[in-house]
Amino acid sequence: MEAPQLELDVQEWINTPDGQAPDLEGKVLLIEVFQMLCPGCVNHAIPQAKKVHRMVDSSQLQVIGLHSVFEHHEAMTPAALKVFCSEFGVEFPVAVDRPREGGPIPSTMKKYRLEGTPTSMLVDRHGKIRQTHFGQIDDIALGFLLGSLLSEPQP
Amino acid sequence: MEAPQLELDVQEWINTPDGQAPDLEGKVLLIEVFQMLCPGCVNHAIPQAKKVHRMVDSSQLQVIGLHSVFEHHEAMTPAALKVFCSEFGVEFPVAVDRPREGGPIPSTMKKYRLEGTPTSMLVDRHGKIRQTHFGQIDDIALGFLLGSLLSEPQP
Amino acid sequence: MEAPQLELDVQEWINTPDGQAPDLEGKVLLIEVFQMLCPGCVNHAIPQAKKVHRMVDSSQLQVIGLHSVFEHHEAMTPAALKVFCSEFGVEFPVAVDRPREGGPIPSTMKKYRLEGTPTSMLVDRHGKIRQTHFGQIDDIALGFLLGSLLSEPQP
Amino acid sequence: MEAPQLELDVQEWINTPDGQAPDLEGKVLLIEVFQMLCPGCVNHAIPQAKKVHRMVDSSQLQVIGLHSVFEHHEAMTPAALKVFCSEFGVEFPVAVDRPREGGPIPSTMKKYRLEGTPTSMLVDRHGKIRQTHFGQIDDIALGFLLGSLLSEPQP
Image 1 (tube, rainbow over the protein chains, first blue to last red):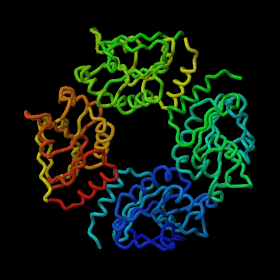
Image 2 (image 1 turned 120 degrees about the horizontal axis):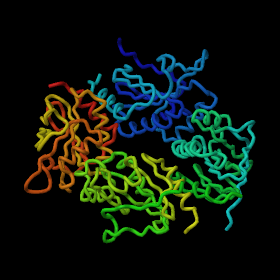
Image 3 (image 1 turned 90 degrees about the vertical axis):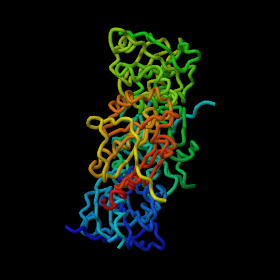
Image 4 (image 1 turned 120 degrees about the vertical axis):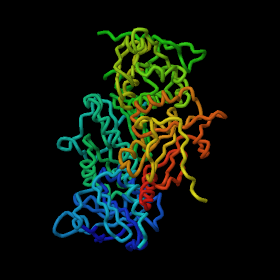
C-alpha cells in the first residue's frame, strides 16, 4: 500500500509570518498532533518536538504542531492556544486543525483517522506520510526515524 | 516577627462537595499556588502536589491548589481550570483566587505579595503561614518541611 | 516492640579523620546500606544520600554509608570501594561492614537481617533504629521521615 | 580527510560465545568506550547503549562495549568487569582494551587518542569511524546518527 500524501486542512497558522502556511516543499516533516490540555502532550511530546526543532536545520527538517481539538473545545480555542505557545516556548509553526460541523473531531484528524493525542507523524521529502505514532515515542526511536528519512535522496 | 495567619479570599472551590470550602481546622496545609498555563506548575509543582496528596492522610495534612491568575485571564477562566483539573488528574481541592477590580493580580496573591507561580505555602495546625517558597522546591526539602510541621503538637 | 539499638560492627571507616568512627551521639542518622556494584544503589540510593548530605546540617543529621558486601566479595574490596567513593563523589563517612567467617553475609547486615541493597535505615537521636526500608525510597517520603525524627526532643 | 578504519586491540571479549571476537563485517557499530567506575558511564552511557541494543536488529547494528581502563587499574580488572556486566545487565559484547607496558592508557584508547570516558564511536558498514563523541550524547542525536548510517548503501 502506498503511503498517503499529506494534506493539512488548516483553520489558521500560528508562529508564521503573517499567519501564512510555511513552505514545506521537499522537506522532511515532524508533525506533532496535540491538544494544549493533554498531559502526555505537555509533559512529553511538546518538549520533545521543541528539542528536535532546536537541534536540526529547518531547511531540511521542519517541525510543525497540529492542534487537533476533539474535546473541551471551549477551553482550547485558538486564542488560548496562542497563550499556551507563548508560555511554553513553542516557536515552531503550529496549524489549527479545521473544526467540522458534523462532529467534535477536526478535519485533518478525521481524514487520517488519528486515535488521539499526542500523535507524531513523519513525512518524507515527497510529502508522503511514512509513520503515524499514537502515544509517546522514545527519543532514540524518533531520532532514528528522522535520520533515516533525511538520508533518502532529495526529490 | 510572628507568622501571618492564612486567610484565603476565594471566588469558588473546585473538587469539593457542593463547591463548599473544605474544613481546614487543625490541619497542616500545603497550598500550591499555580496557573494552569504556567510550565513550571504543570511540569513540576502540580505533579509534586499530586504525589503528596496521594501519600498522606488528609485528616492530618491537606493539599490545596490556589489558582491565582495574574496574566492571560481570558485563557485561564474557572471553566478552563475545571477542564485542566480533570485532564491532569488534580483531585485535591482547588480554590480560585478572587479577581480584583483594581488590577490583574488576584486578592490572595496580592495580600501575601506572592512573586509568581508556582509558589508553595506551608501552613501549620494553627493556621500560620510558616513558609512561602517561590519556584520549584526539591522533593526531599518539601518532605522535610511537612514532616516537621506534622510533628508539632496538635492544637 | 521496642525499636532496636543501633550497633555497627565495622571493619574500617572511609572518609573520616584518621579512619576513626565519627561521633554519632545524639544525632539523627540516615544509614545507606549499599554495595558499590548494585545498580539500584548507584543510580538511586547513593545520589539520594549525597543530596541529603549536602542539604542538611551534619551536627543534627548525619548521613552514613554502610558497605555490606554479601556477593562478589573479590570485586568489592575496601580498596575498590575507596576508588568508588572518590569517583562517585561520596563524601560522607562510609563504614565497611565486618566480614564473617561463617558465610557471605557480613556482620551488621546479618545482625539486623537486612534483605539486600539498597536499604535505608533511619536512627533517632537515642540511637534507636526507627525505620528499615529495603529498596528505593521516594524523596518526599524520605524527607518526611527525616523531618519527623529531627522534630523529636533532644536527649 | 578520510575517516580512519576501526581496529580494536583487544585483550579479551566478554559476552561472546567462547570469548571469540564477534563478526562485525558489514554492520553499523555503536562502540561505547567506558570504565566500570565512571559515573557518566554508569548513569548515562551504559543505560543508553543497553536501550539501543534492545531496540535494534543486531544483524544490522551491533552495540559493543570497549572497557578502556586508564586509571585505578587494580579496581577495574577483567574479573571485576564481569561482575559489573552481570549486575548491571550488560548483555552486548564487551571488549577489554589491551593494557600497554609504557603507560596507563590502553592500546585502542591511545591509538584513537580518545579523551576519556564515556566516548561513543560510530562506525559505518565499511568499518570507517564516522563519529567520536566524548561525553554524554543526547538520545535524539544518537538515534539520528544511527538512522543515517543505517540508510547508507550496503557494501
